[in-house]
Image 1 (cartoon, helix red, strand yellow):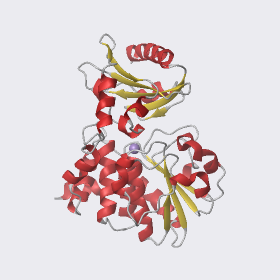
Image 2 (cartoon, rainbow, N blue to C red; image 1 turned 180 degrees about the vertical axis):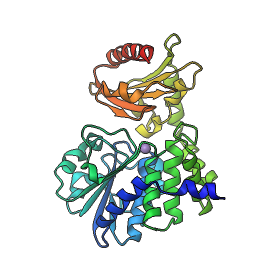
Image 3 (cartoon, rainbow, N blue to C red; image 1 turned 90 degrees about the vertical axis):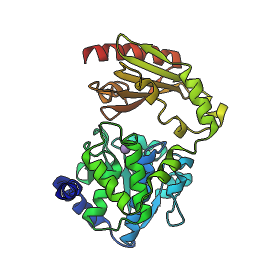
Length: 343
Ligand SMILES: [Mn+2]
């Protein structure tokens, strides 16, 4: 069927950037891969897939993230992938190349950001976020497309253009990336091409039920207890179509869970009938509150999050806001009411 093949074709503008990138993929070179703080399925899946693909090219990859590798995505690692996030910026010292994944803003590299700004070796970016004011690399070294359902889609394109093998481990990484960033093929970024690539990955041996179990069905009990507490804070402004949850400082410690266990919590207020904007406020305990913004429909939460120095996607964004939980919540909800009313 021609339709399927057409969907897998790599768009020309992506192909051109990837062919330019290939000049940096020199056998023997040490290449570091990094993604944003609190790596998600797209970050981890893209990294492990790209690490293996570049190893096929004869490169020596190492993953160096600003925050510890999430336990949830341990199953994507293996003896063949070196992961040195615990070593911090020093792990970047002797690399020949850095590839930053799933980030448009260098600040998302957390405590690695200054080391990356100071690097003298080339930095490449593979990403699908809305461009920021301070990208981690100059424009000619960025492969970015907001039309990509996940950074994993672009890593797929790298493998396709450079004719690198979709090994089972590569395919699992790419599938995890697309599965999680599309909200299990539910969000608006679930393009025909997302399904076509997923189809290709299934056809080389990815087991969808195993992926479901790994990603969604082995959560610690504390995650569910935390969800119970969070749901208890639900507030709804039915007039404006805004719903939000809050989490006080120390909630993660209380249940012995990690920040990755908060992934998806904001989908609960988002799922309420009539919600146009869902918010999740998490008090980090040091005078800052992390705010997650989710939109259903036309509300551009990237524009809203940018007012607080954050950003992301039009339908999913985040920001770090200074203040107490009560202050930040009052301020952001107030602004959100006006923003939604003007949309
Ligand atoms: Mn992503």
